[in-house]
Length: 266
Image 1 (tube, rainbow, N blue to C red):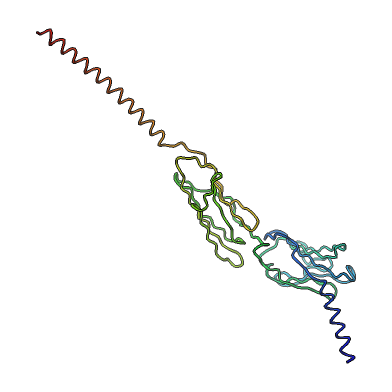
Image 2 (cartoon, rainbow, N blue to C red):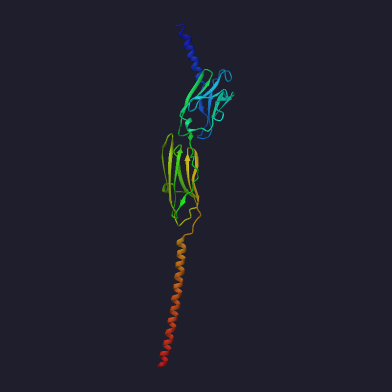
């Protein structure tokens, strides 16, 4: 009986400490290739220099920082905010190998670990391809086939010419899984109306909360060839009409001369 009481008290104390130690993702929008921050809330009691602080994690689950000292300053930095009782871990150049793995925040004998999960609403992987690209033009169509080898989440893409939405008639996007990301193929084919100028044609994609211009072509308006063709026809018709009038005048004059000679012969 006497042995069970201190054991129970010890368990209550440990759970009390763990209740106040936890970390959360501080960065509101995680973009791969940029910096990401995790914030660990330390216990209210005995904070904040009485015990050793540390962060563990990464692809190999190793010690990242220890009391603001880093195992790799070009990659990991820890900052202690005593006023808010938080330890903030900054991960520079966040990569795909650093997601969906465990990170641990420790303070003294207490620790908290959780998986940094890839979710649709908070993570973005922007295309690494050089964009915007140029569109091809063959006189009647503007077209392009664009491949985004790695992107997250699935891009929502739109086509526009000036202020007109041409997505439905000209744009098709197919996205397939590529590891934890997606590979997206964009097929653009737009038939140009020869009766109108079309000006600026753009393809934009929304990746998470970011809007990215994928293609952009500022095509100057072209004159309608059929209009000039009609003018040429009108000119030819006018010339033909003038020639017909001249021939009629000549015939009339010949008839008058013949009639004059005929009556003189009588």
